[in-house]
Length: 404
Image 1: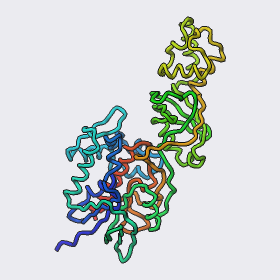
Image 2: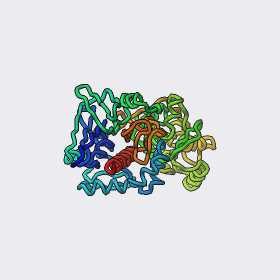
Image 3: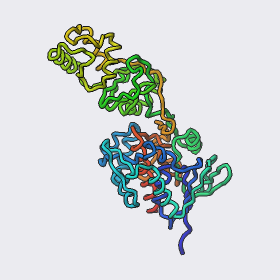
């Protein structure tokens, strides 16, 4: 006689919750997903500007973990079992072809997040699992080997819980009440608010490769940089904000940065400038294309250095040359605050990783309780990496449970 199916409640209908459900054995389990919003997979929908940055083409787990400011040690074993290549295979075998873009980000070929949503929804519905939206979990307690879960309108009894809620304060409080320690969440992946004459009136100006240092924290990053209405953004800034999320929260987002807009050492830039001056003495400085930056930005450099763009380059004084180089290669800017993308908000913080068994993502505190996704104190430097952690952790949970 077949033993009755075990009941699993998945709290949270996001990437991790759905991927776990999509891989669970429907012959063994009766699964219900509880999602507090009216729609499931909301972050998947908006990620990558609605195209869904599914993962990142980095297929060596040792390299892959370097993109996670928090969780890199723990994720190594996770990624050896399921990594971006496996993610691509999983979706492609379900008729969702993926493509790798120039910057190694992975997207569905349709360029629509709906393809990913339809695939996950389809897999879960095919198994006959229940999906309950607008089901805000208010209480969970454990008694006599069962979990009792209360939402506003219903109550459930489960053998096993998968906690995949994302990082909302409410969900962290709930798991804390169950006995887990929470590392206090702080924002990660944010842009720097800066008011400075050099950046004024130049939103949209970008630099292919820039270097940014935070001297007080002895840290630096390089990569593309973008001037925005409120300051600086782009991968170089986002990487810094992720790696230094805790330190920047401590200093309340007020600090000084030093920017090298052309990612060329000052001495080399000085040599380039002098060589150009010797070869083109009669050229006006405003018309001189010496460095790989836009004309608008070059003229802004001259404006803040109080140099007349009509001036012949041969007539520049040593002091004027110094000012240009300082503004270009070691410009000091004061950051006074941050801006986050509300919809794609990422936090550093969550369930303490010491309390999770990374062989199968089970809680070391609670029996038959599994945790994955952004509710953990794991985060990455872009959305694709965050999704990959969700897919990999959820895969481990489903394979472990299927084998019991």
